[in-house]
Length: 347
Ligand code: ZN
Ligand code: ZN
Image (cartoon, rainbow, N blue to C red):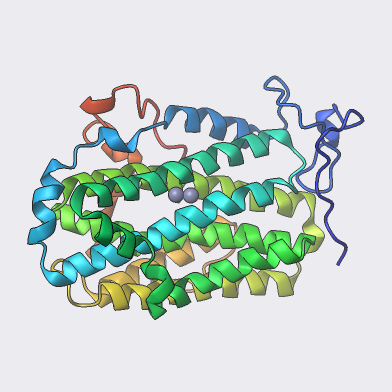
C-alpha cells in the first residue's frame, strides 16, 4: 500500500477551496481559518473543548489525604496500579496525537487534536497532583513507573503501544486507520474499569477528590472518543476502499482484543477484592462498552448478550455522565467551567 505523504508545513500552493479538502492525502495550507471549516463536527468539538477547560489543582483533595492511609491494602494497591496505567495512557496519547496530526490535511481537525493533546497533558498532571497530595515523593515515583516492572501492566500497555509504534514505522492509509482505531479503543474502553474503580470508592465514601478529578478526565475522554469516532466515519466516507470486509474484521478483532485485555486487567487489579465491585461486574461492563463502541462506528452488534448496560453497573453513569452531573459535581469551585453539556451522550 502506498505511503501517506506527511503534510507540507509551509505550503502557499495549498487548496483554499473547502470542497477540495480531505482528511488524508489533501493539499492543505495549514491556515487556521475559523470562517471556513468543512467538517461541522470538528468546529462543534472545538467550541465544546473550549468550554471544558479545567485545572486539576482547583479540586480539593484534603479528604483524600486523610482517606488514603486508611484504605485497605487491596484498595490502595488497586489505586496505585490504576493510576500507573492511566498515567501511561495519557502520556502516550500526548506523544502520539501530534504524530497522527502530521498526516491529517485539514487544519480544523488538527486544531481539535492540539486541544486534545493539551487535555491529555492536564490529565497526566492530575495524577501527579493526586500522588503528590496523598503519598511521599518516593512512593509517587514507584507508582509512576510501576508499568515498567509489573508484568501485567507492561503486557497491558504493549498492545496499544505496538499499534502506535507500527504507525511510526509504516505510514500507509491502512496503518493510519488502525492507529485511529487504537485511539478509539483506548479512549472508549481502556479507561473504564479504572474510572469505575474510583467512582466505586467515592460511592463508599472514600477518596472523593480523586473521583472528582476522574469525572473531569472522564468528561474529556468522552469527547475524545466522539472526535475519533467522527474521524473514522469521515475516513469511511472519503476513503471507502479502505474499509474492505477483511479490514472491518481486523478492526473488530482489535476491539475484541482490547476488551479481552481490559477485562483481564480488571480481574488482576480489582478482581473480587474490592468492596462494591467484582469480576463479573467488570467483565459485563467492559463487554457492554466494547460492543457499544463498535456499534457507535455504524457496525452491527457483535454480541447480543451485551447490548444493554448491565444493571449492576448502572450507578456508574451518576458519576460519568456529564449531562447528569453538571448541576452538582461540576459546580461551585469553578463556575467558569462546564458551561455546556456533553456533545452527545450515546458513547
Ligand atoms: Zn486523557
Ligand atoms: Zn483522551
